Length: 270
Image (cartoon, rainbow, N blue to C red):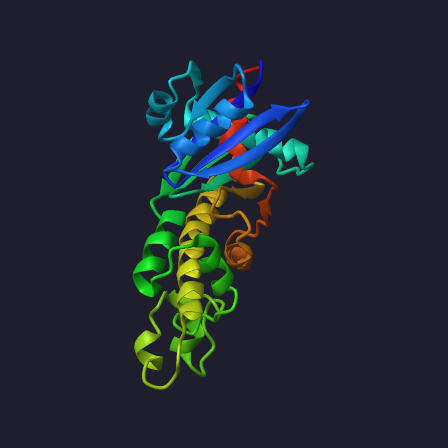
């Protein structure tokens, strides 16, 4: 029997499935229930399905197929461990798995046991919503691509406040996101790319500050960032790396990390 793990999130539906004894991945928008069902019906005669994610009940009703339902945090934890093994990444015995999706959920994995220790409503949904409000752009990939072309002059840095004086902390740290707008609005042009750079930078900083504080609190050896918002988002990753100094921990990124929940659900079928 063919097996599928499906993570029905607030923005995206992620699928992990086995074909010819190899794990494959596929992604749909969260409003593409029909496309997902057509794909399943057209490719799987008698699928064995495990569902996880916030919209799993809605998707279960729509599919009309027998499914196994897996608690989201369990699925994510199992999937992260599997992907770490596949990618030969060794985060240590105690680490954080930070899942940046529509929002952000933070999990402590210690000696193989997983506990959700926090999270924030700031995440990919924040980028999508505010980016559209501020620039009119709707496509996430376009947002990410443009952000790489922008600068962060809209942000007020610590060094901007201290001027010629030596600041007590790294002068390049952001003192206020978008806080430099009124200082430059009449003297300097800014573009959609600059707005997006500042916005994605702000989201990354909120997440990394919370994550680093939790990592220090729980004596973690590393922080593993996963989730659809991280996927192909080099700009966000660069900001996460810049804030290594707050905890001394190198952020880790794993291939196919956005499919952690789907893969974890799939693994529950075995």
